[in-house]
Image (cartoon, rainbow over all chains, first blue to last red; front, side, top):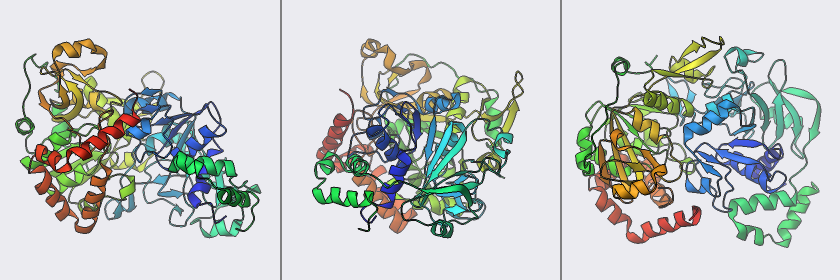
Length: 273
Length: 318
């Protein structure tokens, strides 16, 4: 797997969760890249929406935005509107997926992007919610993609910036969040979801070559296990090429040399590199 | 618990009514325009993050060394750090404060907020939008389905309302009526009819919510030219107090279709801020804002500005 970075693995795994003809409200970075990969592969009619007021962006390969509020994010868009309007489409129910990263996520899918420590005595004051709170509150199905490490996967987040299932059970609905559900959490180690009754995070599938105990070791809380833990298919050469072309530009695609394809093939065959 | 709004703001807004401004020549300089801003004011800064930020106006405000300001923005960029470094800010109202993702956490912002030297009221992005919208609509709050259940809501003491028709419980986001809004636009005429290309961010609601509206524009055009494309007008003259000619007035941030962001400038700023903290912010203001925006653009150089314009040309439909 040495040829595929953790980020590529996560983005490609996550991209497979997005179905054609749906609308995805994506955060910048990995969620956007994963959405773009899906559009270029199996979901050509996937509509990507960004909070900067941008609907139906196509992105210019090699010129990916670093903000959802810039011209690179708007490239090829079908509609430009204002920020509030985008979120009101979400509130109305139009967006099938909300797609987020997370600095810190807990066993109920609550996300913290506000503070490490307490607000009264912050160790690190993080930038804040941005649109994350709204995306997780208002989109129909929320996907989270983030690196799997104990400092990110904590039992309780220091601060609930963006509400997942709050304290589990029906607490999300009781708080007035009547729509929206957390679909999946994608990491470099695994695919996880939430057990329907307790709403606790549950391991469903492993990235190629990863073991359950490895996932447990990188998780800061007791992880529920699905009835059947499957292994995810490794990224295909096609997916890797699409990803790298998007990230680095068409030149990267043209420069996909025989050895890169061979390397990707090795990955596909899950052979040691 | 911090208060959601300073009490004076709550009291003022119950009688907050906009008045139509006359149809007169409103052209003034950025330096004259910031005379409309007073110590203790709430200043809303248009655009978002590094897009269409009214930097020429921001620089003039920095230079004026106003104090005890509250600044609100949908997403705030490093201009917040500059205000902090000059001691101008008491309070930030936003959903996100940083420089931009590639530059990591904003060190000067962290310095002040972590020490409790400035208040940061963190709202969700939609809540910011609805606060301006409520202000723009002339109503005291708007109901919404966002922010419920979060610690953001608890910390801000966000209230809920029960729908009188269905019994549903919704978050009640309070109106925000800034004392002043600073907006950068593509075109304006001297009367204050304002046109913007591309995404509008929250500028329309922000301006209509504000008591004083200062608009800078890439181009001052004739009223006839505005009337040629009236569908592009986002603010009518009667909602605008001052018009400032400011070509490249969002630099080093981007202006849709005109020029891209100068990311190299960001690199240099972020490196200095990381190394020297608030001292770097103050130095930046002294070297750039205090010298005046025209000199700042001269330092950037015509070649650089032309390259950023070429970036925009590649990325936007012609």
